Image (cartoon, rainbow, N blue to C red; front, side, top):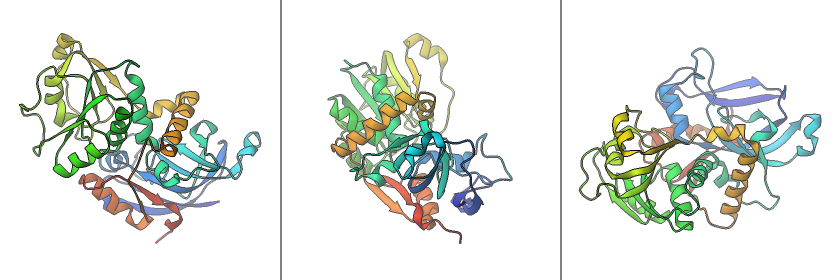
Length: 327
């Protein structure tokens, strides 16, 4: 079978994105999926800019973590999946018209499910937010700081925190983002137009928060070290502004409990991944989660990358894979 893809052979601006075509086989995988919508994420932009171990020069690297589609071929063991609509999570390779996957990566969608574009754009971010929520004690009654509160994971997390009546303060860089964060459930917001945020924000008191959910990294390090209580939970799921060296002596003295959240850990725990998929589908179906989703054509993916990089994209974006053809 022939598949069309979007990828790159060298890191750089969104101009490095190209379309490719190649043959794809089921091989040793369980299912071959014809994709319908695939999510476009900050993680895709970071890989395009910074590269990584998978992004070797000389062959196209195909980004993309998530999507929805239909099973068009299956191994004999999974023949019952033929024709089923599914959602999927993958470490890379989703910007494609067809993708070979294993059974544990997919979740069969209910027949009546009406939110395929929305789900395609929040599998990665939604599962990450769900993992963050699960990392908190069931009886957590403290305050949580959410830097970058208009981001992909944060906008989902704020909705889930509101559902559990947990106080959240969203740290943002503009009034527009503050409005979006409040819409998504932030109890309060604080706008600081300066970046990095490492100046002494007088609006925030020392030792004010029991937890922080940090996907920003370097530019909020100073704020976090100021406001997180001793023995507070420092939950790290990304470094959008860059990595930094954390003062280990201060961490020891204040006894911060650091925890890293990596969504792809779920691929090693199929039962937990299935639980996370089911949670997202219920949340969307019951209007617990809402997602402003832009559906773009394949020719617009580069522009969407630029909007994500410039922090001007509102909500999420997914590619309509039916528009992916060779130029």
